[in-house]
Image: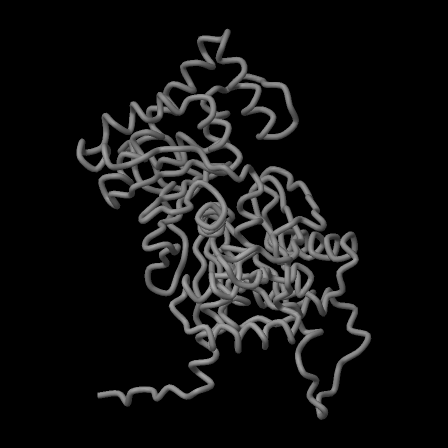
Length: 415
């Protein structure tokens, strides 16, 4: 039988600190008494930890409110400039990066398009590092103030001796993405599947707030999903990302980009929708072409038929999710998911009803994400925020200097 770990006073203090930071982050501004009531910690414990957090510059006072018959209560909030985070969305049509302060206010952003099929490892790594350099330069934030960089990627992320990525539609097999990015930056990296990062963004700030069990569907050129259970994105085993787009909806059906037949992605991914339409559309990228197709459906029977079929297949895929997971909420996101959801949500719901068991369908709400097409980058930025709230991420500029440390100079690297 393994030996039970003994908790020390330091462990308890670290745990109390994390509990208070999580509570304050999502309910700011609030008073010490509010924090005590929300966390169950004693007034003395709250006061001691808050004093420490104020001294470190993590928490600042934000005015006061009257109390019932006593002295006004001082309000507290997280110092937005204590540190900064970067979120990067590695999409199929572009790489997007955003730099945020600790209130998730955008301080800088960058966007580099990718040519169709331009998904070579060297190309994508170069674009990620260029986007990171751009947001650091545009924001004026020194690299030492960055808590970390979150990266949302397509495919399956596996964590072992190192982080590797399996992206079959990219032709990527066990790509050591973190190691490759280390050629250009020393900043802390947090890499996860893009559907998971979007799911976390919707869970924290959007349509997933308050959900007990939800599925967030990421629909762009390809298709993925994030499973949310008990208020957190679920990651079975040692990998992350739910390859919902590669479930079969038609045996022997259309060719999927992964090489198999009849997958959901071959019917509802933006690239597949445009291929099924097969006629020229205005716009020089997938996003503008899909928007034009949706507009054209008002007058074109051919366009309307393609979209009706898309709603049918998407609803069938959602029906599978309902039957498998019985979520209380399904959220459509991703740039194509938002376009499709706003245009034909009633038809998608109708198809889901036809393909799901009646009881779990009645318990499920199907809705559209609230955070827009930048949700993957926003969610990626929550990865270092999560580490910060857990007490494992501190900006380099605020760490105690080690006297014996020899600091490298002139590396020419980002961060």
